[in-house]
Image (cartoon, rainbow over all chains, first blue to last red; front, side):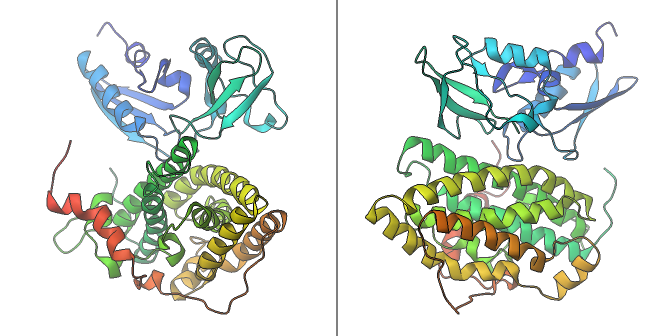
Length: 152
Length: 260
């Protein structure tokens, strides 16, 4: 097979955050290959994240297109954290208009930069947003609202 | 999949935890399109979504641990959520108390989340790896829920005369049901001994400290009552529970095997 499993998996993205690959998001935990049999282990972000069902189906479909038979396993432990998101993923989120998460242990007093204009003069409008992983913020400099990927 | 060793006691415990999460999620979903503001609609349903995710994992675990029935069938999360009747549900009564107004909903959420944070913290080290796995994720979600409930209890308790009155009323309504969370029975005796379950006696002081601190700051009064309703863990439920189950289950029961 010409296309490696890793190359195929790099094309699978989060259906709700299409700029992020599974590896960027940090949910891809393990891949083992035995001939054309592939076992992919993933871990959910939030307990109830509905994107996980889509992600499992997308992994199986993408690998099937390249002749692999995939089994997707889900493990809960150790629990996913935003600290597993890649630096490349955080850059892509910012370019997509979403403020990326900072380190989980350094949250107190942290300034959140506006992904549009870079100003640190921002404020939270709502603790929850369109998906489990985000909150609603706005920038007081450029007046644009934006979503923030919460540290978790 | 490797077969899970049958463990009836732990299965019942996982079912209790799963039912708590499922039933409270259902109550919170009743707020869909009815919350006082759009942001709060989104917030309440996000709380419900986290709880529903926890419930799915816990009910799946309960089914595995209970093992196959005489026909060799292991009950799935859907079997357990949709095909059990009222006396088979073992959630705490606090989860099924009617949501009432927004004040009562937030008072209930404060009492539940302030219990879940120490509960999941303890269970992250449970001897049952399935429960420990759920707990490791749920503890972060519960902490966020607690923070949200706390902010509303403060805002409404220490708000206008009317918001204070309604939050105090909601708190008085739900308070008696909290005592059941700290009851210990023979099952818990065995599971605490084995390191599977959290010891309720160790959870109560932390729960009380969290709740009392929030209520004091919110200028609310800790209710005094000797009434301690109980029975949820044994399948005895409040009057409204049948209606809740009817709404939860009717689609699945009307169209067995339907998918989309």
